[in-house]
Amino acid sequence: MAPDKSLCIHERDPLGCSESCLAALLERGTSGDKHNRRCPVHDDRRASLSINPGTIHRIVWHCGAGCSCEDVRAALESLGADPSCLGRYGLPKRLVQPGMRIIGHDPVLVADSKRLAAIAKIPRYLNGWLYIMCVQAIIEGDGDLAPDPFVLLPVNADDFYALAKRAGVERRYRYELYKRWLKSGGC
Image (cartoon, rainbow, N blue to C red; front, side):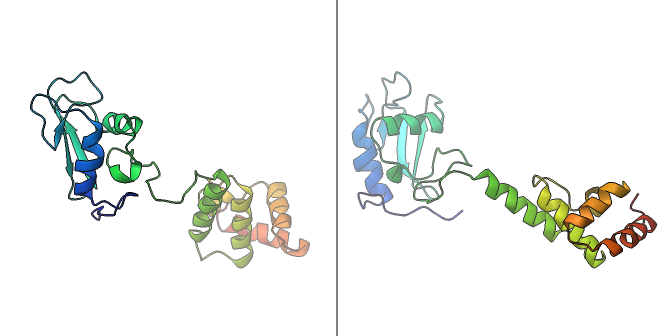
């Protein structure tokens, strides 16, 4: 993972954010200095929260009392800390990170990408029409079909002919194609 040394919206480096932005939001405890502050998650009398610039993450924090980094991040944001100052630390791994322009996941797009990946994995040894029929079966599916012709192509003659028709196979070739599929072990 590359180090997160980007500037925040206040144009401060990680050291400036840890000292000016984040430490200023929290009270000092009995042993508080510029890096150790009272943890906003629990009732902290000593300064058990350490906030420092990180080597990989922009800012890192650690509560000596055992509060999770996700809870500390949520508490810092509720106190007014900007997400650009906090960087990626404390975010769940699958959550969109600050600065990214992704807005949710479109289920249709996800299903289409699964279909494309399945089409790319169809074996190339298939006859041209059988390959096209496999593609048609994947397109009609929900995106979770295996690229295996023995799963995609039906063994029932009527279902096979119907799929061949939807795939654009001419009527005179459908029966011959079905016989060839049966001989190859398709049933």
